[in-house]
Image (cartoon, rainbow, N blue to C red; front, side):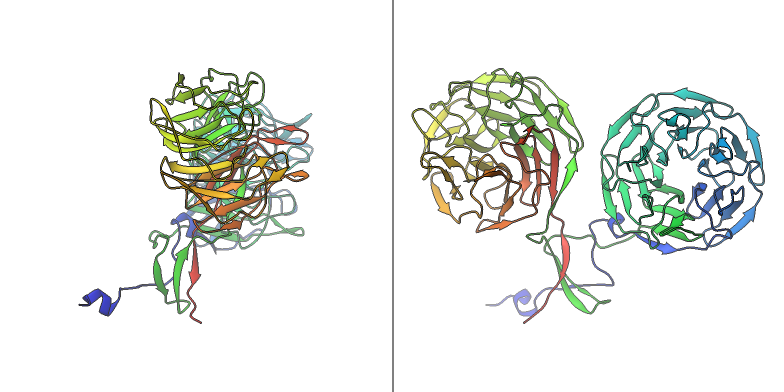
Length: 607
């Protein structure tokens, strides 16, 4: 008997716009009131609905000040010293203007705005222009970078309401640098170092600067917000429209400005609300355009597989993860360059164990932003097979020489030697859930290539069903001892680069669809039904090729930026992975790359 649901079907949401991953991802720029005086190289203070704009070039050097009420600009009292490329902090009723350029030299003058007039106060210690500044207060601010003879600066100073004090320098000298935050928790991003455009981002904790994840687009930058919630927009050598949001650990590209430009005025409370005004638009047009950045207060969150009707476009839609469709982006480099690195975990929590560099004992963990060195391994080997997570890993086998049967377990703090595997070998594959449940298979042993499969239960190894094809430098993926996939690899003689793939169901290996490009020494991550395998050595060259497995077939994806072999890999599925280390001529690498495939909305068509 049919149920009511089977007869009537299911309810489909009706939405006025497409779903979004977050409110921020669906934020947009909208036109605001045009400034009374078009200018570039100006500074600002305040928030989107209550801002102050001051100084700049018209093209004459300007001291003009305008206030914004959320819809229009009003001219108010001028600065005492007309100048451009200055910095600003505070609110529209209590602001701070400092530094800048007025012929014939960089300036150190500081002025305070009380809501009706500017008053000169104590100068900066270092006169400069194109400096970064940040703070929501006129009595506590930080100034950093800039340009002054003999060149681009690293110097930073804090303001306490009456005077400036020199504090810890930036790591990278820059001018035209964006800034956000407060005097004790600031962010400096982008800029130029005569002439390179910079993507560097540095975080200030009240005592020192630390390099964190770079902008996606290197450029002169302007921005606003707080240290964990910043918006960077515009900039570039000639003017760009790029907008990026900082979430405390990384930058994400969002909707562009309507008008590409550089040397913009900027204010805002966080990465969901900002104001961009003035600037220089390509090819060289000084503008008074104002744009307001707003994230919707309510939105329908994107969920994989959801179906809805978009009333605006009059279409049924479904959210899906396209294959192919992912891309690689640069992550922070490892501390130690190496190849034959044993990798495990996921994109935001990975581990890189050992490798064929130096003492071969180094171990590092990745938190989604940076690599941190942790306790060393016990055995100086390379070509080891890994399985587990960033806090619970096993690595086994390896090459000393000779081939080794040694195995070690990681508990998140230290390495402990455990029972040896039965077959000494190198370059095997591994997958599993933790340091108490996993397997290693294949590799190069004596006298030849191995198909041996050994399972670990937390205390001992047990031999189980062999692979169908013995080989070394094959790649493995799986988050369970009872479900995984291995593919690729090499044997010689005869010299054979394999595309073969085999799936493990807990008791036996089954050959499945071949991959597209035969190679060995790949990085990998994912599960038995959703895996990604990348890099390696193909006939005649190091490879950047990247292939995803969906449980049925292989699909070529976006290539690595750096072709390399014997690299480490980690990942949860075929839509999220990490590649690190490896070998690419002329030597070993420390580069890290992050692969992400986004969920998107697709119109449903019926043919």
